[in-house]
Every structure is written in C-alpha cells, then in structure tokens.
Length: 476
Image (spheres, rainbow, N blue to C red):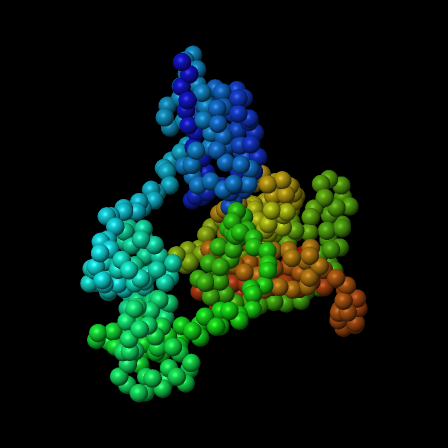
C-alpha cells in the first residue's frame, strides 16, 4: 500500500523566510524521482529550482504560480510505493540547506466566552469602563456597536476590551454612542435633562438637537462636554461626506527582489552616515589603452574590467574603504580580501553580483567573470552565494546615459564608486583647449570609517589611473 508523504518548502538559506512560485515543473499524477526538481521559486536573492527528496507519484500541489509561500508550508504530496526506499524524515539532504525546517508560528486562537447577560439596563460602554454590566435588552445601543462591533466581538473579549485599554479611545467611542444611539423614551417624551443655560445655548447655536444625546452626568444629565463631543462627531462626519475621493492608482507589492532592494537601501540610509565626493577625469588615454589591448588578439577586455582593476589597486592604497562597521562592538573591521560587487539592472530588478577575490584577478579574468555573472543575472540563475559577501561595489550607471549620481552604499559595505558616461567634452589638455573623452567619478563613503582626506585620496588615485593608465604599472 502506498504511503503519501508531504514535501514542504525547504529552508533556502541566507535567512530567507518565503518564496514565490514561478513555474511548476511537474503535474499531478506524474512520477518523480528522488532529488528531481519539481518547482522553480523566486526568493529575495535569486531563482532556485527545488528538488523533491521523495520518489513516487505526485498526488497534489499546493499553490498556484505567482503565489507566495512561507518556509515550511506544504509544496506537494507524493505517494511512495512499498517497494520504494523511503528517505529519512529530514529528506535527501541534496543541495539545499534543509527540508521543512520549522513551520510558521501558530496563530493565536480566539476563545469565545459565554455571551453577556442582556437582561440588565446598563450599556456596553459601562462594561468597557470596567463595571461589568451587560447590554440592555430594549433600545439601548452599545458604544462598541457604534463602531460596528457585534455581540461576538464582546464575547471573545477583543474589540471592546481593546478600546477600554485607552481612555482617549474610549471617550471617542462614548461620543459616537451618545450621538448615534436612538433616544430613550424619557428623552423623546419627557424634559431634556439639561441644567446649564450655556449648554442649551451652545446646542442651539450649532443646531444640535439635545434629544439625540445621552448625558454622561449624574442621572443622565447632559454636560457641556457631551455637546462638544457631539459637535466634533458631526463635524467629522460632514468632512467625511465632503472629502474628495482618493485618487485611483496601481499598487505593486514590495516583495521578492524589489522588496529586498527596498529593505537594504532603506537600512543603508538609516544606519550609515554617508558622504559623497566626485571629480571629472579625462578618460581619453584609458580608452586608447583598451583599444590597444584588444588589438593584440585574444579575449576582448571590457571597460568595466579595467575600472575594477583600478578599484582594487586604489583599495590596496586606501584599505580603510574595504571594511565595515561592527555596530555592536563599535569597531571598524578592515578586510584583507576584495569581493567586488557590481550593479546589474535586470528585468526582475536591480541585483549586485559579487566577483570573489577581485584583487587576485587580472583584466582578462575580471572580464570573463563579469560576463558570466551578468548572463546569470539576466537569466535569473544567480545563487544566493553569488549575491552576498561583497566588500566594495562598483556602479557603472553611465550605461544609462547619465553623467553623475550619488550612489547609496550597499550595506554593510563602507563605500561605492560610481562611474558616469564617457562622452566628448571641451577640455584643457597640455595647455590647449581640446575635445577629450571625459567621465565623472563619484565616491560615496561611510564617514565612520574614514574622513574626507582618505576618501579624496582614493578618488584622486582612481582619476589619475583613468587619465594615465601607466600609473597602474607601479602596483603590478
């Protein structure tokens, strides 16, 4: 007899807690083998194919394409035959961190108590203020009901008890109740319980019918505060009726890569006291050097690779910028390796792949690695490991046709170098006005790790290498 096993969304690592189903790779009724990919999901880091640790027949799938599931939620069920060797409960342990490691926290259950006795003459607003009396059985209206509460809300102790926790909120609820509640028999047939002529005049000047109110004073006496509360409620209702409708718009959820980018940039702006300096540089000689290198045959060298090579040389001279701040220890941690991130705009959003040990690579190796990671970024196949661990970021926004920018630091790094477009401009060269290839370079840095002198020295060295690539020979 077959045994039906449930496969849950596994822990995909890097602290990820949910994933979006992109494509189902199997159908219900299809036979799957152990460790066969069954679904492609998108996390905040990358696209991942998820293998199933069980072999058998798929009996159910959970979630449509485009749905977001938390880690530990059921993905599918598989009927495993008697002849099939069942895996251990923890799964096959193939390529992911774990399978079904934990379930979402249990939701708090609402315990309904016995409905309150409705035979007494007190109002629910008395109960909200701690008297414990129940709602009246004839015509009395609970202050909670003026806000749309029901007897069920009162029974489970949520809506009214929450209101009672704040005197300001309870006072607002009472005001609504005094205005909204239908008048009692005494209020409609007998005299209005008002003593103060000032209260009557205040109501008369504002066209307020005192018979609508239930007084908060002794024996239902209407006080000045009752009238003022009623006038505020009436004014709020009038404003709501005349308020212009909210403009229609399109809402886009901040989730997946877009959500991860939003969280990281917000954290950077919130935690890092950044500053930016910039300089224009004559890149004519750098462009000539690249042309000469590519004329010798072999793989073509990219401009990004040359800029990366310049960055690693500059970081060797100014290692303060290849660091991060340990906030808890109040220490600046200087790193002895350069894992160079570079911004890549894809159809799925902005990602920052990381070139490992960029300081040990030459221009040809950097060119090849940039090309590989860029292709993976556009295909959506970058792994979490290829998107994390950067120590410094190079942002070539010149590909968008802009001259300058003030980059936001890729938290928790300490700096980012921005490169604008290289374009012909008038430039004084060797004492004469000439048309040269000019680029704007900008450096955003964490002011906690260094001061302007260090940042300026780094940027000036980069500009010198761009203007005269032979400067790099000193570090080769």
